[in-house]
Image (cartoon, rainbow, N blue to C red; front, side, top):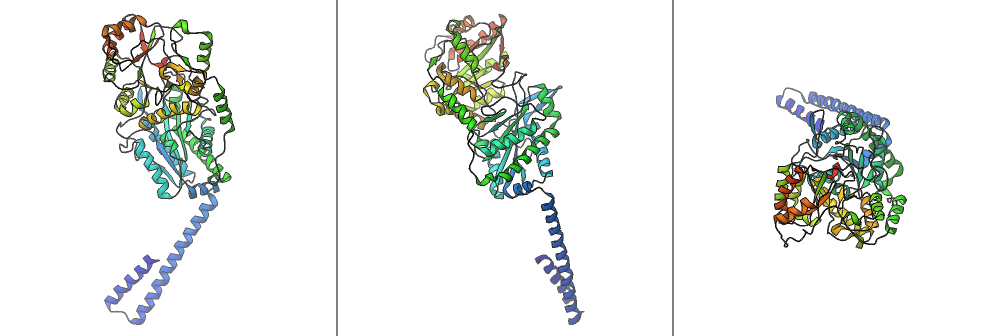
Length: 520
């Protein structure tokens, strides 16, 4: 109203300045102008009313409900922060693809498809694939601000792909917060239900197939959030779909979100209490009843009784490559830093060897730059627990927290999950193995080690060399402590001489196995 009124009186002022019109003509012109503008204003109001009517008549009620109460935030993974990471990479038909770039494409397409369905409040956490300002912490802040600025609840969808050197594993996996959260679980189920028309479902998770509970920062700090691992880039079958079926896959995701919005409207869950998952409670009760008797790991062949072998197989734990070929698997335990990890990494790089470093919470807090280097140079980072406590001495909740506390810290820094767990001091029980397996981990013991953990008990490079070269056997998983200077000094020659004997150093991912609940 103010705009057209101002225009009227501006025109009248010009007429006055001309002093060529009679007062009666001026009054007449004023009335004509006011009537004209009032008519135009009424027409604008009428058109807007018609558009609103069409919108409410043609837009499904569950979309209207979502637009009134929610913002949908799409988070294409990786890209910013001090690591400037591209995520993992994969090669298909001679071309290299980076997770960051592909997930950006998915984010753009998913945003378009949701808006085409009528969803108005759809945002992305980044402005471009390589947005260097958007680390996971920056993206988290943006997600929360989208909700605050619009005074609506956030539905967050984070997009990633999986990667694994054992190429037989494939399928979609969806992560939700490690708590009773029926909204996030329902969103995961709706998206999974649509995506399974195109992608296989990976694993069984703990509670339901392909949906895994994790307490990652992005998940735990948003009331409704899912992290979708679209497929395994390491599997050609999945990778071809990831690259060439983006349109179909994002269409399925949007369909899942739309199904979820309809469920939200129907159930009015916004005002109700989260439901209790009776299946989950029953599984937890079973775990709590398992034998908690402490067993110390004995790595010699003579220590392997049939009952222990059966228990290890039942809970997906390993201590050697069962194929027993001339393969060796080099692993390091890193409880704290003693100045030897960087030289060890130098040796591994020079010899083209990939290893696994099992780290503790203390190590990650104080040496995240070294952990970043491990990842950058292609090594696996494994979980050695948050506080290096004996798991058999802990109850169910504390055991679970020892594993997941470190995993949370690690994911919040690097946006990668952990897959392997090494029990502190090699102490385990049937219950601890079962709990670790239920969290999606493979427990990794060892088939060669020696007393190298005391950093003050130095016996020289030759001593360490002899222990390593004479102690290994076909298929051995080697445990060395990175705190030992003797190990760091002996490693280069030991690797070279073992290669001369015909041994190949391989990654744990290359042990021909299927991880818990996986489908080859």
